Length: 166
Image 1 (cartoon, rainbow, N blue to C red):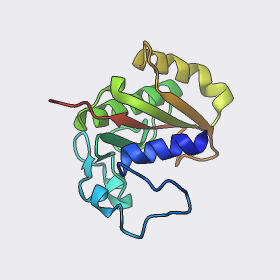
Image 2 (cartoon, one colour; image 1 turned 90 degrees about the horizontal axis):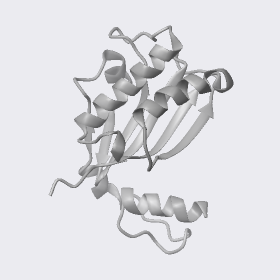
Image 3 (cartoon, rainbow, N blue to C red; image 1 turned 120 degrees about the horizontal axis):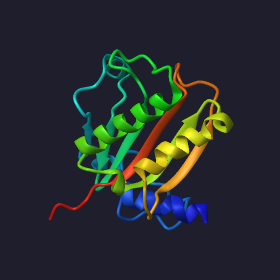
Image 4 (cartoon, rainbow, N blue to C red; image 1 turned 135 degrees about the vertical axis):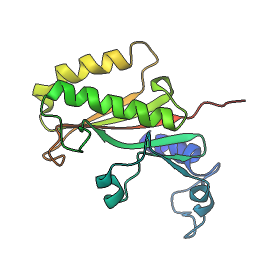
């Protein structure tokens, strides 16, 4: 089942048709055309730390917007020390990036979150999550416990389907 899911995601994101067998791998550069039409998004210009690392806020490929990990940083890029405020800032940063890419929370199809202390933090995260995703259908959600997030305690990355404007 996971092979079918992965194949479906790749069909939607990268190429309209994949080889029928895994052994029929595409030649190097065969999918290059899909990246040539991709576009990067920032809500109001990337922070200096992001420009240095060459990480983008969001990258559109076809009708999908891939939003890289958003954290609860202050204006100077430092982590917000209060955990709930940090989570709320991460969601606010996510919303700004989604908006820049032409999406809303309703367009999100997949969420991955990273947590430094999942057991202790889960209640707070679920409260903020419920405020941002108040009704079904809910996106797929994967939560991952990690040891380090560069001084942050929470990070969220998503995939959203860009609505058709026609």
